[in-house]
Image (cartoon, rainbow over all chains, first blue to last red; front, side, top):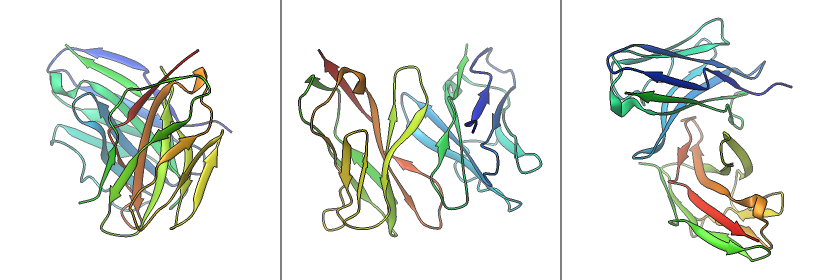
Length: 112
Length: 112
């Protein structure tokens, strides 16, 4: 079946603008994760959704970052008032509960 | 906290050489262990995994054995190919915490 998809694949924005990144998980996967891959910090966990439970937001780096998951499926990661240090590849993954995480191709964000 | 330590790269090998990429971990609980691979321009792909001590994960000629006594999960391949050139990430997940904790990645370069 189809894998995890993310859009856009690339995003260039100006400092101070808001951006929205989208993730479509594998159909039937109840868990969804966002990670960030940057040169200075490696791969970092951002947020985790499981079914209808409250999300685990412990990895979000600041209150400029937020995410939602509508209808238990699609998720949107929003970064407000972007800064240059937000430049990174944002990766989404999904899994069946307690099982292996499968990753999407990522969104490469560049903040000028 | 939980952490993963990988050998520094790049690792440069000739085709058909033997590969070892070292990985050790620290975990507060009993983790599952993973190797993910990222080919140039692509997203993270699961390469192999092991969920309990002495398990051996294997895929595409790669192997890794979960060694609880040495807290290690070293990746090996008997004969590398040019197409194996990629970045390899060791990772763990502690049951009940759901987020993957990644090492810094090791770049493998295989020349003909």
